[in-house]
Length: 71
Picture 1 (spheres, rainbow, N blue to C red):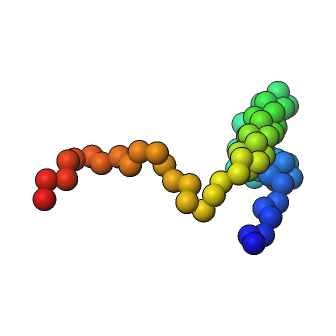
Picture 2: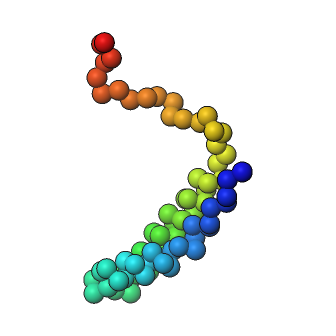
């Protein structure tokens, strides 16, 4: 069986630190709080998506083809 993935919520602070390292001079206290809330919301959605059981054969319902297959 596949190894369990780590809880995505533990990465919120790590991602925030990366953003602050890259854009630190442009991130004020209000922006930091907003970024933390957005990252946490993304992590919460990831937890919900991971909770949805998928079978090995699950695949997209429709396969997009840009042009008709006229061979």
